Amino acid sequence: MEFNFTKEQSDLRDETIRFARRELAGEVRRDKSDAFSRERWKKCAEFGIQGMSFPAACDGKGQDVVTTVAVFEALGYACHDSELGFGLGAQMWGVQKAIEEFGSDEQKRRFLAPLCRGEWIAAHAMSESRATNTRVVREGDDSILTGHTTLVSIAPDADLFLIFAIRAERDPMTSSAFIIERESPGVRVTPNAGPRAKQSVQVEFESCRLSAAHRLGPDGGAATILESSMDWQRACILAPCVGAMRRQLEACVEHARTHEEFGQPVGKRQSVASCLVDMRMRWETARSLLYRAAWSKQGGGRAPLESAVAKLYIGESWVKNCLDAIQVYGTGGHPIEYQLEHDLRDAVDGTLYSGTSEMQRDVIARRLGL
Image (tube, rainbow, N blue to C red):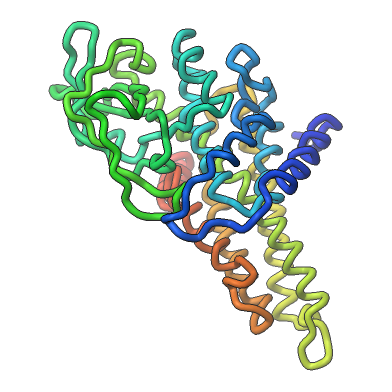
């Protein structure tokens, strides 16, 4: 299994770094009241981020999975706005891939192409897809949704939602998936808490009538769509975190080399050096697991074990690296001053969204036959 980049992949990765430093530079947001930057979102679309892994027929760039993951890793390395990287990944792997895999040609034209162009923002309502909070009743070819779903990430500014609902008389495992525009009659969005791009919302439905054109995949086919979507997200959504781990490690090494205490660089202390060594090993392993999962997804098939291992290890390693970085800086600077506090908050989030660490352990355990 070979993970060396081709020249084209290396060039695109370097181009992404230059783009991010040029167009996405600036102070990161810290307050939940800060407005989401559609300007940055549009710049990413103009560069091709949202359409990177999709065909030209959908206004995409036609790149393979490994190349797309390399672009997202580069984005995380060069852009300090990790919320932006999370939002882009959540839309691409959670919604766009579902439409590409299960949508009709008309749905791809109507919904996927505008997402690739950056004209819309989409949110994936996956956290309660197997619960009974949203019910659907069929009336002829139409579906009428009633209820609500919560913890819908990146939704405060979303124009489109991928929603799961169950037939009132059926088991939750036979739920159906729907693509719903925010402005559809009967849809109401109520923000909850959290940084703006990761802020979760409750999406409520009051007799929301949808035509058959809004149902994604077959009636009762939501479980298959959810399984595929989660597989994509677990495999790829933390790619920006791997890039951020590299950026943080480089900053910590530079600090350890140049910041002196008691007449010598702090990096000469064994405790500091050990932190840096551990950070390097975690980053190397996280990167290998990321690209192994991406390579496993290259053909579009399922990779539940590889995806769960990557999601679990990268998420938890990013948290540990942030804590080690705080130790490395020590009295040399407050965590907020060096954005370490912001990194740590984002890292903790990475162990929660797209399936918690505990869920990944359950998946891995089942694959071990336990």
